[in-house]
Image (cartoon, rainbow, N blue to C red; front, top):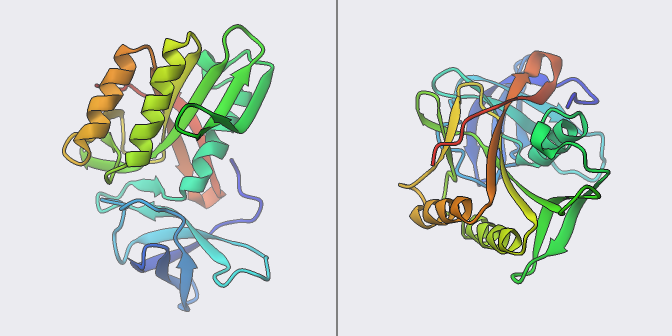
Length: 236
């Protein structure tokens, strides 16, 4: 995924009120930008470090700039715009990068399904059993190389796992795909200490036949680009 307009580099001052961040631009101007991340962004924020942001030409936006990439306390890069995750996964599926999800003639997004009134991120069909793909963005690293999900208690995430378990038990393909937007993460595990119920349900899902995948992204803010490029191990 390459941005239509080049990202701009700045220096992060702080994130606050969940959806806002203050930044100093390359020209020394202090601006407030939108933070498109509902999570805790734990271990993603390093005040005084470089960050990158996009700009929208929409005249209706109060804050025209959107935070895209952060520098972590360890010096890694993290794609913190969770809205990009589905675009990255769709692009990777259509390009054949995620080999186990290749070969489906039809790809639909945000399809209603399940007993708990959910929407699946992607429904792949037309080649055997339908394939339901749920995408989760991973940016939390607390130990070197280890990505963790979630970064805060996620009852919604646990609900999605229950829905995927039902899909698998009905004989369809059910896939949980961790989109890893963090340059330092080499494998992914459930965050037992943060959300033990999610971790427990994830292991139950894997036992029930839900396929759990992880793909790591190449993050190149100097080129205004992030793309999924390699499979990562999932350690349950």
